[in-house]
Image 1: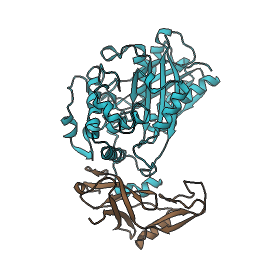
Image 2: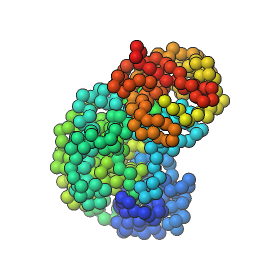
Image 3: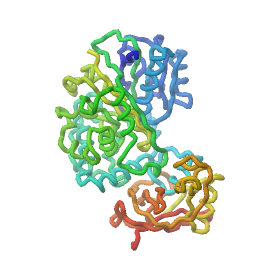
Image 4: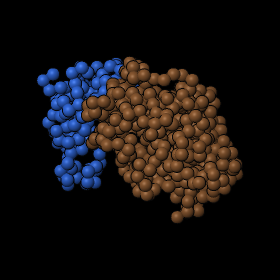
Amino acid sequence: MQDVFIVGAAECDLGVTTKSILELQSQAVTRALADAGLTTQDVDGIATNGISRFSATQLADYLGIVPSFTDSSFAGGSSFEIYVARAVEALRSGQCSTVVISFASNQRSAKSRSLGGVVEHHTPEAQFETPYGPLFPLSYYAMAAQRYLHEVPTGRAALSEVAISAREWALLNPVAFRYGTKSLTPADIEDADLISSPLTTADCCLVTDGGGAIVLTTKLVDKKRGVKIIGYGEATTNTSMTSVDDLMVTGAVESGKRAFAMAGITPQDIDVVEVYDSFTITVLLTLEALGFASRGGAADLLLSGKTRPGGSFPLNTSGGGLSYCHPGQYGILLLVEAVRQLRGECGERQVPHARRALAHGTGGIISTHATVILEKVS
Amino acid sequence: MSFPYLPIEDAVSAPFWEGTRIQELLLQSCNVCSKFQHYPRALCSHCGGTDLEWQKVSGQGIIDSWTEVMRAPQEGFEAPYIIARVRLAEGPIMLTRIDGSSTKISCDQPVVLKWQPLSDGRALPLFVPVGG
């Protein structure tokens, strides 16, 4: 089978930009293409969402290209890991030759986020869940966290450590939203305002503008910066808050198994782990599901301090959605950071000798799961 | 507790909501695989069968998990209140509210059904801790 590489990766402006979605998209796409030594004229595949109903079409029109492959699948924050799988297949089949996967949001500038989420009145969830007034998606993650705390005595401390560790990484990342602030203590997390118990505002990701893009192709010109896609897998579990039987077991179990099987490696072979941290609980559940820890065991992993800078389990090295950037769908930025770590471009936060990285996206209410495993070429 | 959002029912779910008017909790049960499901669907989510019937269920359950919502998601809701996943004795999990104090509830606690009237004559199933 033909190898597929990520040859370009970039962020658009992050934080509070006051820019439109399409201006931020253009930044992400042109910067990622420049990073790859390519231009929009080389692109014949577009995968994106969050612009409009016809997102990929909209972006193609804006960029002035006529792609032979598009994908606007909407799976929340894991969409971009899912696009990697689709793009690899399209590139291998010859449907297209260069795919850009991108996302950008101006949600902080536009104040477009609400605590109740988007209610679609015709859905079963609107009929059987909305009347009770859950925060969306927060209350579902809160119930997962409550169950975690019920089963794992050190759970609360471990949730806090997820945020503390992310902050330590963000302090090393000049473009992180919380760069230049200070280290967190458990009290900073646990004494923050409760919003949907047991989660406090400090257990929740940022709400920022931002986004990024990656460029995929089968042609690798610069071997030194080459990053190969060696595995991917996905699993989709629920829209309802009641469909998943066990809140401690997520679809990442299956998506991870599929990705590791394709790559022919095990969790022990991964040097850098980038997992979606919409909320602190997401990280614990995902690490366990992917096989980095047993049920309840991610608490010990976090509390060992190994996930912080300099530790033996580098986790969310950009500072994550909690302290770096969370533009509503953070999955694209997991991939950007994984690529940069494998290329050795991360400055102070660089993980030494990083050869393999895993990016795992989670979307909706722990609904959509997609795992991508990357390997350095040289 | 305030419940400003009135659910829009459809042909499949109408019997559920009719049941709430006479305070009967009805769930779909599959005549092919004999399992219950909630929310109501046009097919059985366990086996794909389409021969479903409505059955009145016990109103007994346990709290699978819960959260106290401290900020209202939209106008009309009055926080704080407790949202929960209740595992019904018949199997399915319901999203609901617990009428009780957050200091006195926990995961795996038994609860029983209680009805909360809506402004249009229907009612929402809520739960209260057993003996609470």
